[in-house]
Amino acid sequence: MPPPPPIPPRIHTAHDDDRDTPIPDAKVATMIISPRPSGTAAMRIGVLLLLVLSLALPGIEAKIPVILDTDIGDDIDDSWALALLLKSPELDLKLVTTTFGRATYRARLVAKMLTIARRTDVPVGVGAGGRDGGDKLAAWIADFPLTAYAGTVHQDGVQAMIDTIDKSPGPLELISIGPSDTVAAVLAKRPDIAAKVDFVGMQGAVRKGYNGGAVAPEWNVKVNIAAAKKALLAPWRSMTITPLDTCGLVRLRGDRFASLKRSQDPLVQAVLESYRIWAGKAAVAELTESSILFDTVAVYLALPGGRKLVTCEDLRILVTDNGTTAIDPKGMPMSVATSWTSLDGYLDLMVSILGR
Ligand SMILES: [Ca+2]
Image (cartoon, rainbow, N blue to C red; front, side, top):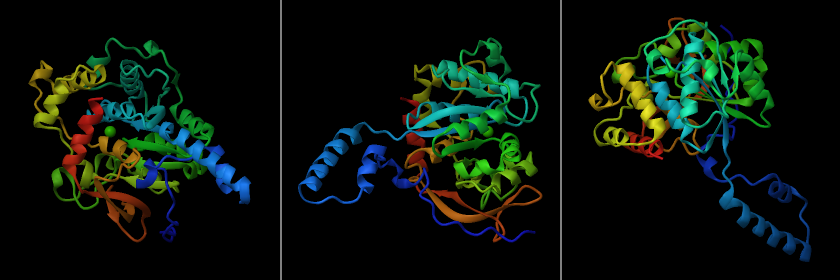
């Protein structure tokens, strides 16, 4: 067993709470770091600075570049997470890759969702783990071959993720909401790339398991433990996860779910129609609550200020050989969303975002 990695200094990451403070543009930043002038010149520059700030700040929205890596098409929560992401203008979606096999099926699901959301500017990457197969949502994409997508489809999603990260002028966030096949393939090809990426994942179970019960291996980890070890031990620029402790408690019921059923928004209707097919119901009207929406929490954590409703602990997490994610001194330091400060607040926020 190698010695534990050192705890890195606290990095001002892209998803700190204070991130919703607008970031000055390069011009303003240059002025701030310039040698201090004196007298009238200083006053002029000060006035100019105030003018630039007053003009710039109200309009500045520091969009965060993100890549989504998803196993959409198995559990339905990925569809909800993608819709939540597409309705979050704070996140600049650069690429969606598939993971955990059946890549063509998953890419078609992504492509149809993007088309409904009028976001065919977003490329789709056909990811790792195999291309054949389909599953519960096959009926929803029966009318949508991958060739119907008006946007770009990268047949090598692993290379597309590498290229997207390389092309990004600054760091970006990787939102990982599936098993780690594609992420591990990226890291195998380009291990250095982790240093440019803030990793935000739905992985693991730290103190609670499914339904708030005893800790047991979580799906995204246990179905490909070797890949999960690679992903959760990589030297990311920063690492944040929502384990079952928090994401396993998210379900929309009652008025919250009813309000979404009344929505005329095409993307919300697409999610509900997908859910109807997934749940084996004859009509959306028969749906009374959502399933557990694990993956949406990873999108929430990627949002600016997306930690206000959860408690995040800095913990060392070790992926064990049987797929558990244990707090262990030999583990990788990461920020772990271990409990909700306001689960109701999050459920309300999710309905509010989806209702946009
Ligand atoms: Ca998933």
